[in-house]
Length: 350
Picture 1 (tube, rainbow, N blue to C red):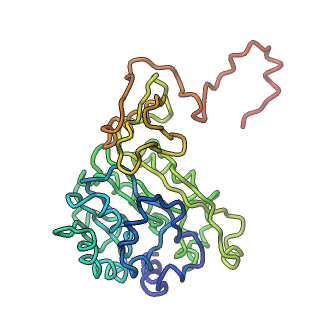
Picture 2 (picture 1 turned 120 degrees about the horizontal axis):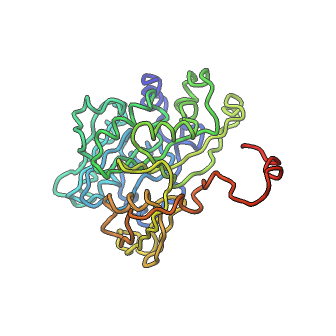
Picture 3 (picture 1 turned 60 degrees about the vertical axis):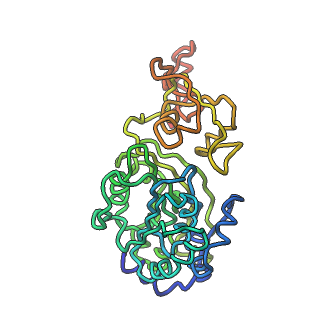
């Protein structure tokens, strides 16, 4: 499949206009602060963009960011502006044709952003084998990836390598394509379906389990949308539904399997650049500046034990436990009603 993907993105696709689905070409919901940065990105780089989401996490100033499957470098150059001249962005891709475009315009972007020296580096290699590129353990603050994990034949190795190179408290923030069921194996051999980011996509629940197996105990869904598949391709994919989704996975060894309530809360200070009024951790945590916001233990750690800590005030600790956090999708499994046994037999297990 490596050869299939390299041919598809290196030879068959000349620009994003050649894609047959919307899976790998969307800029929906671009925040206002990103638009002037994109206006400075070279047109050839923009034309070779194949992404399915926005992979620009908050609070990046001065950090080392790694982009898995960086392609022609659109996200790399935007990130290079967000990390600042003292930050660093590393891009890894296996397609030489894409990297050639990125490298050709490296100096153009250095001058556009007014940097004395380039703060980006492009590396040819496989995202499943970062050790071959001499990326050391715990050497990266944030990893991003835009519609690439589905193209990797060995997705477990990608997650394993991401965990290895991330520093404690680091984050994997990425967008990818997922399905509502497992893709039949014969479809994964279709070069067009695979190249269009469809038949290599993970069933969403398999992804969650895989993430947990490789250390990312509490994957958080940030954003998602349904993907419209071209009519001709839909005849091959049948009733499978495809979604673009953005997740954030933190390298925190003390996260629990469930959302546990310790009576904790946080207050967002409104100090994250470009986010003065609201900080959105994920789909279920939208924190207004200055407002007391109750959180579970895992959310408390995601804010307290990471680069985000400087932007929050924290209340409470882990000394007292109150059970499962309300509204997290699970609760006490036992029936504590006073109804007699005959009444309880009416229902059934889901």
